[in-house]
Image (cartoon, rainbow, N blue to C red):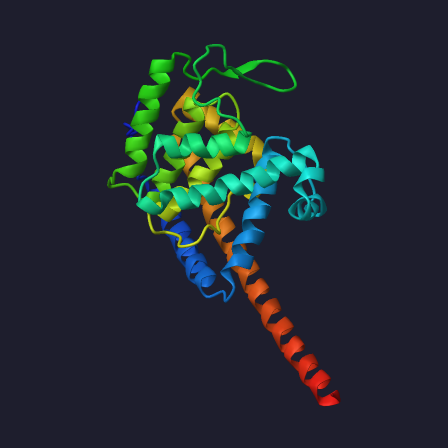
Length: 286
C-alpha cells in the first residue's frame, strides 16, 4: 500500500548529501548561464522542443526534428507523433504560466495532463489500471485503485509540493516524482506529466528562473535503471538508490545544458558579427 508523504526513513545520508551539493552547484551555474542569453525565447523554444521529443520517446512516441519543424509550419498536416510532441511542449509552457501564482495545484496538474492527452478524462475513477511488462505481459505494479484513495494521496502530494520542509529541494523533487508516478492518477500521460512537474517544482523553489533543465534525455540513456529503481522504492524501500539516480541525472543534465547554452550563445555572437560585416559590405556597394 502506498504511504503518505513525508517519507519516514532517514534520507539525508552522507552519499545523498554529497551528491545534492554537487547537483545544486551545477544547477546554479546553469541558471546563471541561461539568464545571460540575449534572446531567451530562442533558447526556451529550442530546449522545450527537445524535451518534448525526448519525454515522448520514453513513452515510445517517436518523431524527428524535421517532422517537428514541419509541424510548426503546418500542424494540420503533421504526423500523429509530431502533434503529440507539440502537445507536450504546449502543456509544459502552459504549466510555466500556471505556477506564476506561486503554487502547483491538483487542478493545474489536471490541466497540464488534459493538454498533453487532448482530452478531459481527468483523474482515474475506474478500477483495473495495472502497469505491465510490454514484452511478457507480467504485472509489475498496481497503483491505487479506489478513487477516494487516489484523491487522498493526490491531496497529500499537493501539500508536499507546496509546503516547505527541511529537506533539500532536489531531494524533494525526486520524492515528488516517485510519489506522482506511484499514485498514477490518470489513465494515460502520467510519465510525461510527472516529468513536467519536475521542472515546475525547480522553478517554484527558485532553483531555475527559466524552464531549461530537462531529465528526459538522461532517462532515455538510463531507461532500464529508471524503471528498476522506481520498482525498488515500492518493493524494497530503496529510496537512497532512487534519489541518487535522480540527483546524478540533475547534475549531468545541468552540466550538459550549460555547455549547450554556451555553444548557442557563441554561435549567435558569430552569426551577429557575420551579418554585421556583410551588411557593411552591402551598404558600401550602394
